[in-house]
Image (cartoon, rainbow, N blue to C red):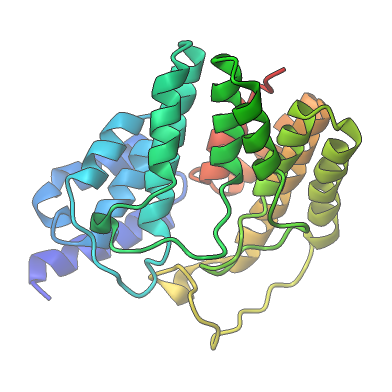
Length: 281
């Protein structure tokens, strides 16, 4: 490895150990070494992730589409996650601006990965988040049949929350979107059941002692032994409980849990995305 490239990796790792670093400071650091960042897919997607986390969705998307990624150990799912994240957040802006057709185009695009991402879509992948917002978009254009079809699709998939440690695990927060979709379908009891599942899982596993299976495959982390998985478990449980309380309309409890999670990890994308979440009637 080139000495300059090695220095970038070392400095980036050191920077990420200091969770108190503000996200914009991390962006500034990476942009200062942009010539080197472009040489490393892992550093490049770190920049894209930070842009998404600071609300710069269009720039994040543009950077993704301007780069050709290659598979690397520990990078499973990282690029596709940011690709979907950017497009969904841009589509949400379209919905707020009452531009549903533009939202539909972005959300449909998010369902397909271009070859430049360097990874394909898993057969077991679920699209709860995308389907939920497609439902809202079609509702805006008064296409009730399409809206209902997407809301029904958004209720499918994972039935019980998980810790989501591995690449092929379905994200536990998709259960939150199942609940939201059930609300749109006027099935309030089913929606509440989903929210309580999130709360119960968080309460039951908050104090679990985490044990890593080092022979497991598809753990999406480049620095396996530097990660504090016990803290990650705590943040995950706070996060899921917060989502459950958002679903139930208990926003004060939700905000307290979001704050506890962000105190431990100030760049958890789920927390950043949902801490100011407003349910659509």
